[in-house]
Image (cartoon, rainbow, N blue to C red; front, top):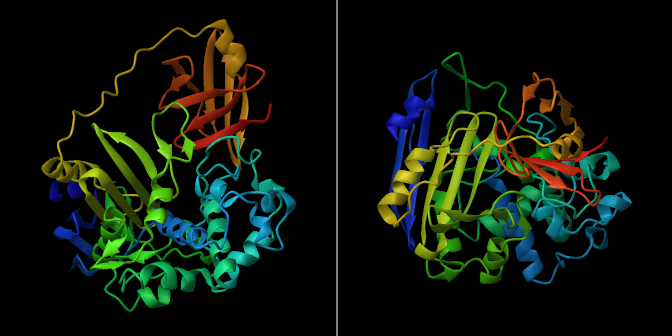
Length: 417
């Protein structure tokens, strides 16, 4: 862990390892504040980033188990004041990233409870990059809407609904969405690293209109309580704190990921990793990163929080799981380049969009070139009928035989020309 902190230039991190219904290891290393040199401690809270999504999903799926909402019915049946397209989206589509809503994650914004609903009720159809239900595409705004549905169904602000339905029942006493509450607990400051030097991010990022997608404050002890309940059919400290049906629905694949054997459940990535079945989610936001990786069949999990933007400890997590579970070898990442055909040139060339982000694929001199946003144009390498590099771009064929979507990094881009 200390070696990985140094290699990745992370000021500090906290880790917890769960087996069965116990935390069997807890440790914090590094510094919580590069200006004061304060040492990191396990009880310190961090902002999670997108691991928040599993908590938002737990709240909304729990309401469905109680009969308060049908996840496959249009949310307009339960929430007033939405545009017709948004009203026609289902909670299933929101939670599985198949609602066709583009992605964005503004870190700064309003701080009041009204911001979530005010923002969503002002949406137009421009928030959709494609029709709902067509393809998976990771969408933070989709989870804003899911959190707003929780707010409407409970009659409480999203932050209060989460406290009532998730945090307090699980005894997560230092978990909150409210910065003014978080500042009363030992807090690891969020950092970014510029030219090898870590700086505290000021002002701290906060945007109440996006809280349901990535803004929970918590520590590894509290997150361990959620994980223990999740791995033990909802039981914690001898009590039933989560309905097993909620856990089953969250852990069920609801959307296939193009070009992958992985899938997405509700607030969870699902698939095989080194020969074992894993459910997990990572989080990235200004100043912080987190990762929760669970192996339900073995009832083991590793929880990592770090105080650098987007940082996790993948080698440390793998090493910890190697100590607990019989894992297969790491998957090979080797790929073999293939020749580009004339069909590739006509099938894939075009402009693709997800919100403000664009991918342009140009056919020239019997080759394909890609330009992503304002980045420089790069030559593409073919690795399979639908797989291209650099990186991994999956070409999803439409009814006319041409590429209808370009999928990369769990985000899809729809053809616009």
